[in-house]
Image (cartoon, rainbow, N blue to C red; front, side, top):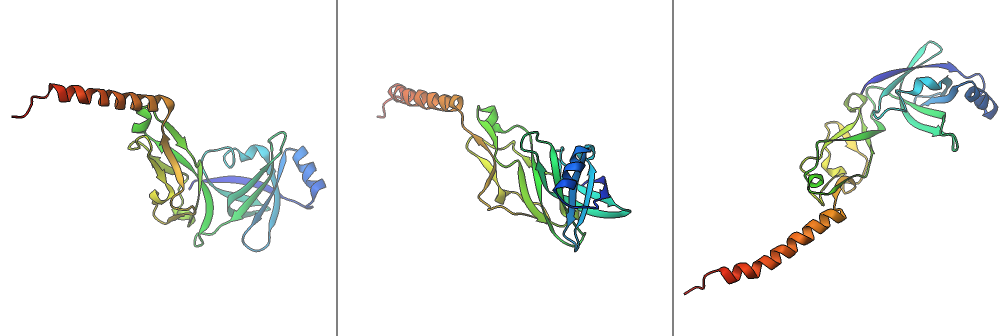
Length: 208
């Protein structure tokens, strides 16, 4: 996983009034937990570009009051009306302890089923996994080229060394679904095949 930096300032007071003042000043109230005492801090909202507004999942090295914390983002809260970031929770991690995170799913290639008129359906844009930080990729890459109409990739089909998917094995991650156009083509082909069968039989020479 790639590491990004975030500089924070310790919060002297933790409460709604203080949080509202921070947000008005363009700061995001944050907390680090997972290794003893919680660390409350605030950070410039502009510095969250490579943490939240990115398709990858990154390690976040947070600097607060001269101390560095290796973390991963666990939760982000947004304003219901403005959709602006209002709070962020970070989990402190270590190299020797497995951590649970959500990784984005990326597909590569064009599915055979899509070429035949089917529709690609990415059912899980992120999957929850568990593993050591050193084993976790920035995203889950799936090759969808062999998928025909009606076929897909389930959680049980995904195997990454040192990483465990925290989903039931039968949960579908991506599939190629049929469409009306594809169904019409299949129905027409089936009809033509049925119509051609008697004609072929009539042309066949009689056995002596």
